[in-house]
Image 1: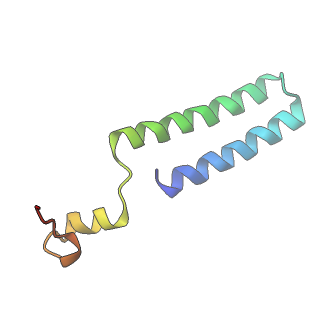
Image 2: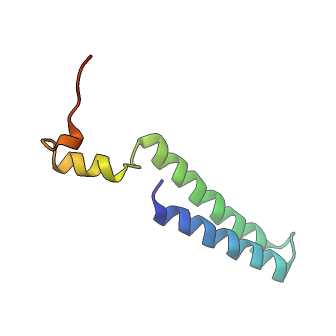
Length: 75
């Protein structure tokens, strides 16, 4: 999962807590805020399942397959 989506989830969680504190745990605003958190978490899970979370080394090796760091040896 990219840092960007992790940061967005954390911000949405903070916003959901603030919304629930301000309007009450049973309010529509509180429910909507937590729905937004769940949607982001589902997107993060989907990205993980798809394999879109690539490490910086993987990205580097895609661009530089001949680099020593990217060599793969068969045993």
